[in-house]
Length: 418
Image 1 (cartoon, rainbow, N blue to C red):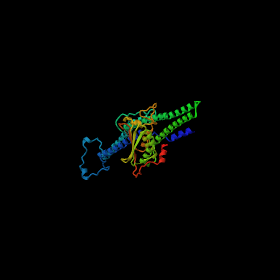
Image 2 (cartoon, rainbow, N blue to C red):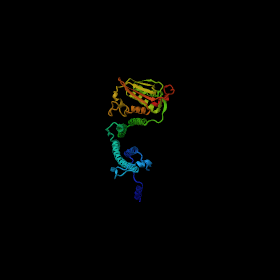
Image 3 (tube, helix red, strand yellow):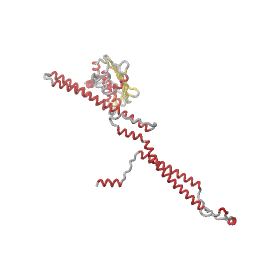
Image 4 (spheres, one colour):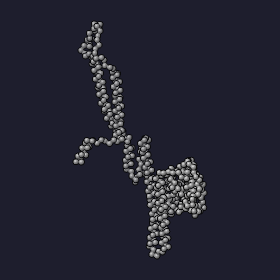
């Protein structure tokens, strides 16, 4: 019964063709030709009718009495011929105009059919690049983003659309490759401390003569590996949060925040024989304070880790061109200018391999870049010819009075050094 009901519904409501762009363009071409042809036919009919003239009067004109006596008999050569009256001429004119109108209507109908067929063909040729784009988009998947359209032909809107689509595919391919590298590197970074923890536990458990001191030492090393994991996971979460953008933006004092970070890193700087040269000026920014604090911390930590013995770090804050800026400049090894982009990639360490690992996880500057992007901040990095980097970040500033940036409270500094 359901099948019969479905057939009945289809008969009651016949299936109409899908209203594609090609069909709409064809109907548009046919409609325009029909309007133009009908207008031309009407104008031609009026002009021809006007040229032929109005039909003569139906009633014969009366003759004057004198005219009857002056009428001459018909000439011999005119005898036997049909004499046309005014009514005959008017009727013949009407028949000619009617025949003209009918024949023109047939010609218009024929040309309308031809124009619809030609419009269908022309619309198909014009929409061929769109069909190519649609087919390519349907075929492309995450494993075939290398495909491109490479549309040929005139430099028109369709070719520009094809180039835009190719550019989009290029950006998607780059993003997918970066994601694959990120997942592979993150998996390796997380697997290494886990393997170290498992190896330490197996060695201790497999030692029948393990003492309390050896167990304590093994557990301390396991806890250190756990701390390394926590730092990596925290860095990944911060990176993901920064790349997702920020919803709430509040004013914060970039100068005071910088002083707090520098104050909390004094002990480590002394251990590394690195000297701070802060130059703090008022700088009120707007954004997410915790993320901005992580940005400043990563800049300072990066400057300390990649420095030289008896090196220095200059930290400058202020307001420039309507932005609250912080600039961290440090001494250190020479960085090739063409390697700066590599420094901001996750898990990328300049001159370090997985066999010979450098300090840190390689997330510091990538988090800096993500936080700056989330704040719509400017990020400028310059490799110093004598060694080291100079990194400047400009946050959107707030026009408001800024309190002086003094040293942080002792309890606050102690909390940051734990």
